[in-house]
Length: 481
Image (tube, rainbow, N blue to C red; front, side, top):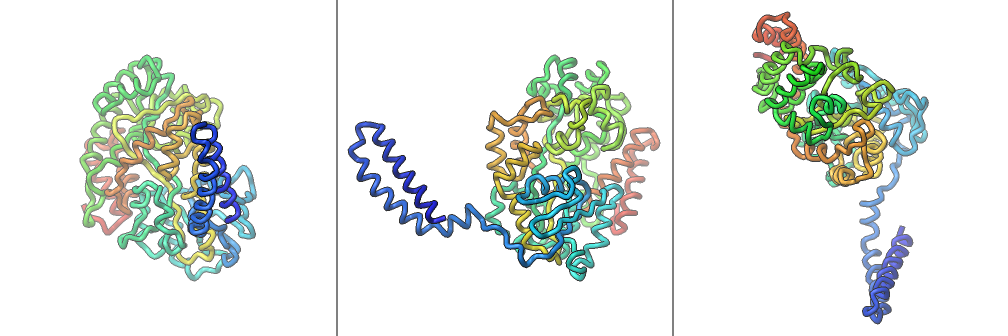
């Protein structure tokens, strides 16, 4: 490395000298300048070589003391695909199924996948994490993935290792968005997880519907039609008159309102219904009654029908992962496959989701877990590769700002649009100060109860609210309302 740096320094000095020659009148200073520059540069380089090398080219991870099996717990194949496609040296067992695992050097990688439905993934973690420290080496959970809605549940326990204990310094994470750290910082100030992605949200609109109803699919034109909630509701009526639902289901807007609350779901053990949540209920009830939207569940058939032209849905709300990971881009019949979606800011900024890598206490693969975190969440080139290959929004502010300004980058699903500037603007405004460990359970129970209200199974909001309270206190008996 020293020889390389000396050569680069010499080349730089010569290049500087040549440029002076090219300038004509300064040519007489070339010989003196070159000699002085080379000497000074070499002296500085010798003094700084060790520090520069450590900062710019981290040594390859020494995995010799790690175990033979890396066990990863997750709920879908998203992280498995990121690891397969972007971690250097990963050899997959099955190129078509990332969760089939593979090898990193001599270490076998195994995934345990438990879907999130009905709290099943958390139940699996709750069953297996307490005995992890005493489990046989090859059976230990080494890392597991968590979401924002329940991150604190695990962050505030000894089941997760402080990232500092893996040897990862704060300075290595300096370019990451602050909110991604806040979500996984425990009550004692310890960072307990790291994410490769940021999740600012946008309004994702059907370009053909925009052209037919609004006269243009230009993002600025669409934004004017959805610039605030009153205007959004007026546009919903216009869309309905032309045969389009504004959204597939009322739940499409829920995350926008729930991300803009002024209070957590639970304060001092008591359930709180925030004004922003109530506003969502009132708007959704009006839209369902007017048939501007439906009542289906997210991820269900009614919701995903809008991914196709015959679904006649104008817009969805979501982050980058929703656009390319969830909207059926691989299906030739879908709107996404044809590049038929566009993105604009929408009535209100928000974020939704995100996946964090947590190191399980008791892991026998600390060096590999640390290296995976470093490679996938701090290596700028690898993270840029995730953006270009997967159109994910990554957790690296300088990298994202550079790509937002890169005219060569575009998202095929969005018809060649580069939506990164609006994602970057949204990421800087994300505030997760009102999250709590009960978010997933409260969100799911509230949406389920309000669905019954929207469909007329409960005559009043108060009846639906009582059903919500009953459901939540069955999940969390310690809560009151």
